[in-house]
Length: 231
Image (cartoon, rainbow, N blue to C red; front, side, top):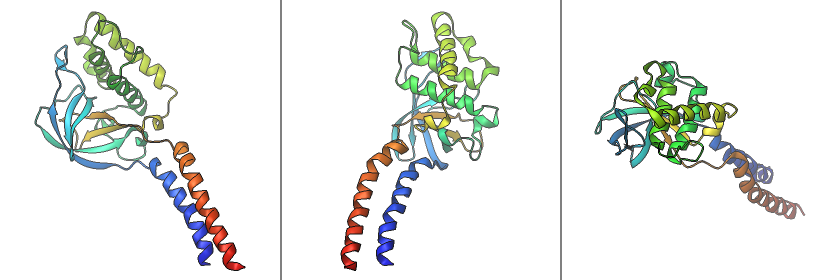
């Protein structure tokens, strides 16, 4: 019995190791807005902004909430969600205002472009980060019509970014955006809700491919040990 357990236990551990990254629990953190950057477009500073989140400092964050306000030095409690887990538990502040899961998928795609602009979302001569920021605001707060503050090439670029986000994210499940976190103000805003693009976690299949050979070797050695013990 002891040997049989020793063989089966690594397989159970393997399952836990591979499935762990698929769980996205909500938590709460204290965050302080420490800087708004230096990029101004229209009447507003545009992302990324910077914050202290828990014990992390100088964290780049992206605002998705045009209607509310935050001030540098302000501290608040935020509920943390992974975009991939939205829809499985309590609502974010912006969901309570009517923002949909598809909106979050498009905003997550736009946030990825903002921190790593490509030719897809950048227009020569335009304020690339600013245009993407306004596209996110327009997506989440269309009643306030943030695009009214843009003109010329920046208005065109922001409008194009919205269309590109709709196209690119239309067939992408939320699970494709597990590298994007939502910091939603506990109890609602103000202050504002923010997004954060993190380093992507290894996919389930990638982890399985790395862990499986090692675990199978352990099982093989234990089976040899068991066979030797029964001779």
